Length: 147
Image (cartoon, rainbow, N blue to C red; front, side, top):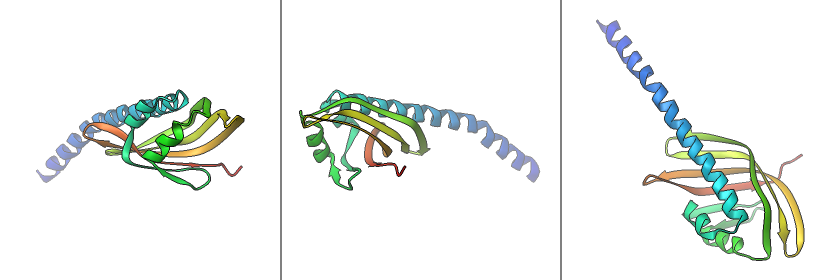
């Protein structure tokens, strides 16, 4: 009898596994889409879209070690002397941890700032949290590759 109960519990647990995997894949796809939306809104200076994606307590660490809040990032992004031609994520990997998602990958940006052209490649980490049914970006970290 005890063995039958154990087998029944295992079967029930395994039966729910495909639903859980499918749900994680759907959430992972949603985060990937939000990353693409972020890159496009950044390139086009769509500050309203960017603001809607960022949590109020957002923090970002840039390549030079400087740290900015949501207000600091929005101020930086609204600078008209900073024109972005390319903003893209490459080799993006999404890891789901319940209502938290960690996106890692490469980031490429090309444009012009203060009249000078630039083209750089970074490694990046974005942390997204789901709150009240909506995903918000809560932290980002960008660093220069060592090679």
